[in-house]
Length: 217
Length: 217
DNA sequence: GTAACGCTGTGATTTCCTTCACGAATCTCA
DNA sequence: TGAGATTCGTGAAGGAAATCACAGCGTTAC
Figure 1 (tube, rainbow over the protein chains, first blue to last red):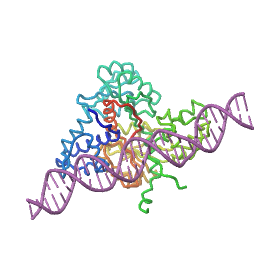
Figure 2: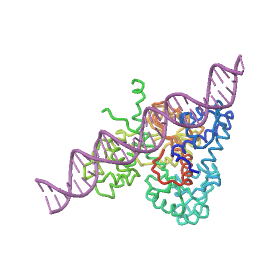
Figure 3: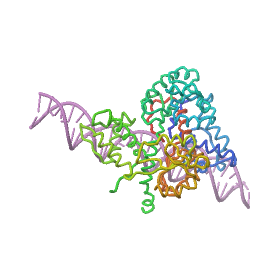
């Protein structure tokens, strides 16, 4: 199937839409309008409708979308039907928090193995996840069919860990280390850089005063 | 000085440039070219030069930029000269990891107080940061002049915590909770949504792409 | 039956961001 | 001194993403 290229931002928003749909499933009525999804997810109604075009689920005029069906359609679009196993590298403070965060949340997208260089961390089970030495990445990645990995190591180790992961077949990396990873073009990386994010917030906390000007002009 | 409005992405990249400059300070020569900064930070040379226009530091042709001076100029541009104190709300697994991550890194942008609803967590010191009950947010935010906050609570608590923080004078929020916060227009929020990020990575790990160029959110 | 209403799907438009491309500036070396 | 090589700063072009705006269609009211 030759599909239009879908932007990174759209995929991110679809994930957010699905989350608000799951929340509405328990609380609200069976149908929902684009403007309601928009309000709950911080988007605009037009953007919601345009994003939903890519998943191929159509609402009905004057009735909006069926919550359960739409959530299922987004899931079909975003998720691998067979599930995807995830590896975590770096079991420091942040790594352990990530393990706790994802433990038991999505069976279809679970962290099934953790790796660390420190010998004292190896062969323990943390938040339900076994911790192995770095050297076993190739073996275990092959055994568990791991294509997705999370890097939560110090900055110095991140690139070498990424190289190892990619050699072991990983095609997508969520990188918490504060460096820009060099990866081949068929590997997708997403950086979650807490320092950069905090500096952005700090900057705009001081400079965000355009609103008064806007009302004037 | 009437300055052109600077985009969120540019601020983020400036933070990244500064980081690679700090790293180059110890290892490399005293000057650096835009293409070197670009390679180390995952941008393009043209973008580096354009971003640097906003900070008002000029390099010299054929010599590039003086590493130390450029890093200082970016700091002058990004940072508050008097420093900015940060509050953290939510001292669970993730909150503690955030405290550890930022502990002692930037004296100019330090987490000086933590808050949690659980009585057993308050009045302890975690990674060098004192933990207070939620009810004391107004008092302590005023005393420490806090304008920047990090939310690491469960999703259900995040909006009410945000409201409290904003009422206490906070103007920038780094939100780790998986919800979209409703805030007044003079408050800047940045979402670091680990679930959304991991789902994006999982999606693009499956859908082989030719080329990516990406920064976080 | 039909008129009025409100929401969806999507072409058209606008806005924002990135990349291109080139003049000007600085350095090297003969 | 001047030619050649290299990089910066930035106007202009290009591209991508968000928004607008409206036709089309269920639904409801009477």
